[in-house]
Length: 164
Image (cartoon, rainbow, N blue to C red):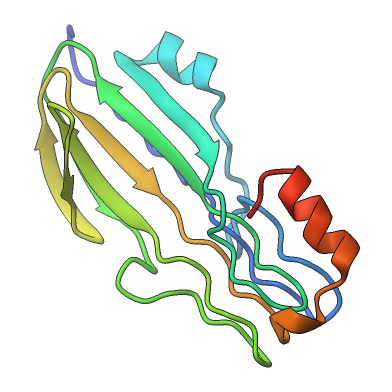
């Protein structure tokens, strides 16, 4: 690409379940004034391609109330070399559950090169070349309460919506 560019993204994860309801899927908790950049806007403004942008099924911790789901966002460098800086959390430890709820799934940062996946650090900078992809997989929120006490209708809704 001609010239330099900078893209700063905050990619939300699953919010933990509350004592009276499920956690929220893909939310920026404790962060304000942030944008969920639409794929079309990102791809038209930067020499990047978004390969995947989807909820991570089953990433929320189970419980009487389920933790919110994390998200997977895969971004490919099109025709240049780029430096990607990562400042992420909950990759080495899972978001905890409360009152018998299960922890959410830990997040992952992954380099995809020629179809092979290589783990990336929680924090650090990596150089990507044309055709390489960084995959950000955010953690799911922890569940609340014992899973055996979850309402049958909520379980069916989770299945129908592809959340578990």
